[in-house]
Length: 112
Length: 115
Image: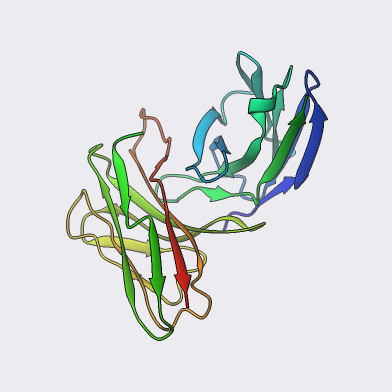
């Protein structure tokens, strides 16, 4: 089955810096890669996703890149703000009939 | 944050007791999922269901059971066979099929504590 590895487990940056979180996946048939943000005590919420037919996607300060050959994808947050502090999860989904498999999460701390 | 609800928010159970966690959605989603969240472990899949009266085991199904009698409801039972049930449980739902978003929407979660 699918296995998703996520690094780093913790990340501390200064306000205004960029943050990058990386994930690798094992199943070459996976075709959907979402990123979720979970604030303390709250439910995970989707912040951006990408499909396997696209190499990069941007939404304001957030971007995701996908390298299908290497089977890895990354989340990029630019101009970080204190409200970006949260736990971020990557996930991968195989073909129809399978569920999302999540990485173990990255705790991002943005200090002002 | 409407659409998918879980109850109760907090649940306390004595060892040896079964307990059922509720999950309801009014998003008309076909698929529903149960995840367990422990510190440093991410979200681990327990069970999922893509259609009424059918469900599949996830990575950590042992000690858990589910049912899907209605499209809107996917209750999870934590049985006494689950050796370490204290955790945060999240339910989610999504559409399935080609040409639709695969985004999973999460409920607010139930924090289960075994005393």
